[in-house]
Length: 294
Image (tube, rainbow, N blue to C red; front, side):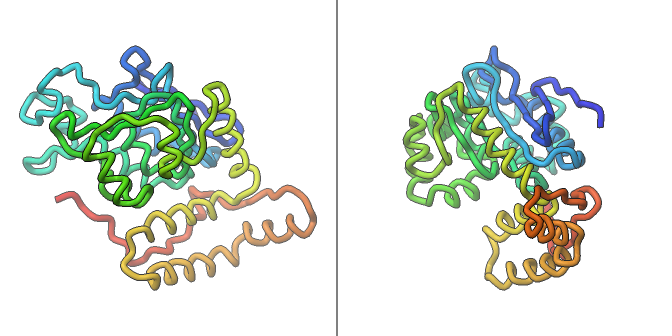
């Protein structure tokens, strides 16, 4: 697969790990409509490429993402102002779909695990875009802020669904009500990030975790696991999980991956899983209907 290029991102694949780097360092990687479109497209690329078995997202320079680009001044969030083509494409009826939400919904559907390596300031959409990432690791110099109420707007990127599930309702409300910027240590203590690392150690630590996934696990099993855990976070009853589990186990149990997983364990060698996400992912959701934006 040829290496894709993006206007606002850097993209690299090495040893089964795709690294996506937000790349507007002169603007602290501030989010634009173009970045929204690039992020949606890059996850289409990682899903389609069987060589990619884990994804890391980080930022270039001293910030992860400083939030929305405020270059438009007071009209930055005004949808009655002229919109970029990328936003016009997301208009449904008379409503412009929130760009951050379009990104996080695409991440939610990812077939590959996503690790956030949060290297610096992450506020506004810079923090809400992290919420559907599976694991977030942060630099000790990172800062976070759900600053929306301080800008006269409201939380976006479907964060009202994601954030309470990660940190609990009380913490989510406090952070969003106050809009204050807080340090990486608080993000760790309240469960927003998994671990803190010295700046020079952050990406190596993220890659080490990604390698543990790449070298030991079956990609199809990981894709199914990701769907099970994320989709069941909003299920109405554990029976929904039981139905999906049962279909998955029946399919996976007869697969080449299952045979290889058991055989390699018994033979005390590294596994070589034959199945591919692009062609061998079973449909364990016959009743699943993707909600439409209306």
